[in-house]
Image (cartoon, rainbow, N blue to C red; front, side):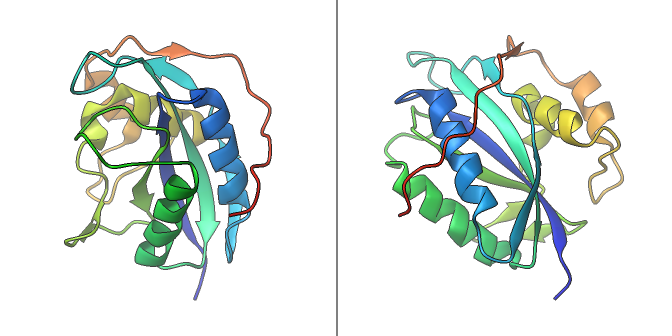
Length: 171
């Protein structure tokens, strides 16, 4: 199987969010049959959904992978679990959220996975990191991430200072 470009959204608002994201990027870099091409800067943004929770730290990672979309999803969910992710409240606080945003030029709609991510066009904290990674990025339907970013509502997005990528213990 040829390698596919995949873009993963990263988010956290619990247990040192920047460290959670840095650890997740280190784990993404160690995935089988996968190369970390680049990671975006991290951003702070207001939560989507319930507002009685801390701001989020978000970013994105660009992977080149030979894993199928569902194999990659399984790996992302395993990383979330290793970071203590519990699915308690929809759009609630979380230690780590990894979303498969784009997988090659594929449009996927299944019970487990929707790619491009269903809310991608409405989230500046997803679009801006994608632009940082690949300014000319285009969705399978032909829309560009740059066009979507211009039309996206503002969510008080603030670029954060760089965080060194620290390895997380295997698990």
